[in-house]
Image (cartoon, rainbow over all chains, first blue to last red; front, side, top):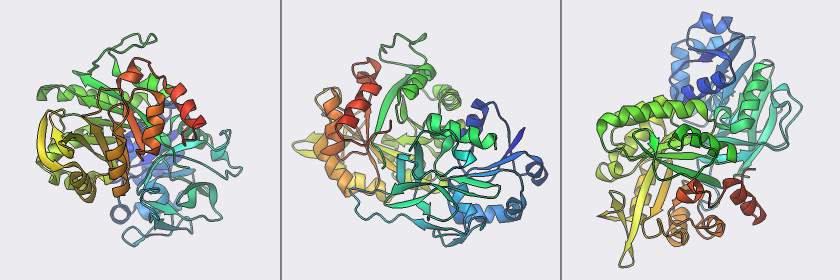
Length: 198
Length: 251
């Protein structure tokens, strides 16, 4: 099984590759459309700023390619946000795979809620989904983000921080995780291995 | 609910852990990768590697170590110690570090905080502040707390936040090594003032000190070294204690 990890101007791709290596997966970092199309699974990682990332994807025509793909596809962190319709981060039109809006966390009380949301938080309201197979109840995952996807019919797990937000989304062959599975200990490993078995 | 983080800190010299480490299960007591894995398996929420290597040519050793750690563990980790240029930061992030901590370099050249945030994102910028009270006023210190600066700690914390730091690692030099508890007063003051998370460091001696730093000290995370290395406080016991005391913790 061949995994393509989409290469674009985003940070922390290395950790995703190491995590896949630990699972024994055969992963390649690439922005070559043919290689991405031919892969059995595609992972869309990300860390960075939404409008810069969208510009880069468009300049390489990766935006239309991503929307055409038929194999299981996993967006991670910024990858989740870019799969949504629109992000408040520099008012960015995103890919629109999920009809969901991405908003900025506004701290109601700086003593209680800081932005970014950094650290380990719980996945809640898990639905029956192959990505969530055999997870313990309310598992913890590692987050670092200032923007969040609203709850939607595509939400398959939520997390509470200031608001309930979409911790994970699923529609057709597209899956997405807001947290960093590559940094989320055994729970993260399970999420990635679940994705590899879809 | 977002949990409070427990962070062991490993001192590194020439790619090896320094300070005696009292782990019977370690085959090689100086191997940072093996120690990191043990902490990760025990439930540490994050790790900090502090490089105390003095010479520039040993920097390569650090980048190689960072790659080994990134391949071996699946929790976030920060690398700090003597990092002073954007190029240093880039090398260590590419090697697999999640966050970079800068200390003296930020004091000497505050603009580096803005540059790091713009180029790599605030999420990977940790500014370490060493503070010491001089006649009742808190001043930033550099060079491991030996050298005083004219910067007031509270004002500097606000400035690094405004410049784009993602987190602050606040070490009280008055408390460091005393095992008498964290500097809860100044921690609470700075944590309440800032919109970014504060990691408390210096003074951990028993489990109650962690409860205090998360309640009175309003810290988002707590860092310690020797009490973990010498197994005075095993991380699983600390976490069950905090859980019983009503502190939100990752189980």
